[in-house]
Image (cartoon, rainbow, N blue to C red):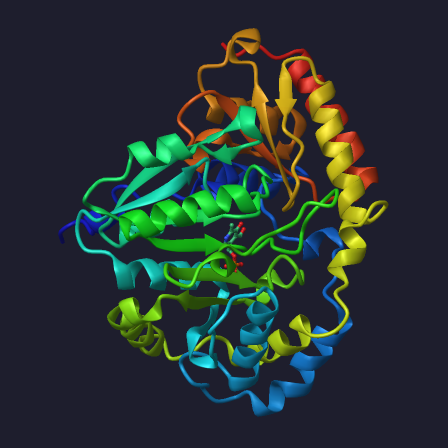
Length: 405
Ligand code: PLP
């Protein structure tokens, strides 16, 4: 029998957050080690319980959620999402502009598959959340990374973006608040990106899954609220703000110059119907989540659990000789720079493996975020302070004695 190979479509597809190093951690767990996994932004296992109302809602609706729903989602959820963005000042948005999916992940795949032909270019941030780059590659597109500038609080470098626009550029992707850097973009910066998109007729994709996880009075602006004449696709969901990542409930919303995108929107409808619909019981949680009291605000306010953990992680990282970290203004990650010369590091993946084997702590190396310069890692600051503090001690001890061979 002939060997079975994977498709060439996968040649450039990479998602290292759950890649070989995570597999090594699993192997160590099987051998009896306890690994502290600071590699994935999954709030619930760290005791960030979902709001009660959401759980009750899903339980209440379970008996009547046995059938498929409409491909684009149940009506109540779509209305709730529409209203959510109306409150964010997106004008001219209707219920048909909302597509509910099995998490933002599925909607990113659908959005790229509906858009791209072979060789079409998409501008993506570097560092990025790697699913975006993978989705572009898998959809036959060409990812083109623009630089985010650490010296400027990890804001996108507008001149670099300009220099990378070609006749083949179809779209630009923003992640705001950003994973992995935690940057929250200013209105002025977003306006500059809108101006570029208008000038070069680019679709703007904005992944705003962390739009309520903001620290120190950071203000989030939904880029789609800034213009009516550019075509925007905005993404969010329940995984982070509402701590139910396992429910797989997310959405995309089209807005702005929808007339120009009529055929593209038809494509979104075709792809949505081919996968029937998103998980129905969990769609019912969307309306409840988006309305009323927002418990995430208690976690991110001064003295709130997430804010305290963010402060602790950023401070302790910056205290380590040879490590610096721009404190995040949003999301749940610290993205830290390691002095490659001081520790003689040529390979960031090896650094993370060495930390795993000596301290039993799992982080993610910078290259996994499509950042091809410098040595970096991402740390998830979700554990309680009494676990995070000792973990930071262990990371500090590791670097104090580390030199890569
Ligand atoms: N977008 C960003 C920026 C993320 O960080 C994540 C998950 O970490 C996702 C999308 C995926 O979210 P979902 O759970 O809704 O698929």
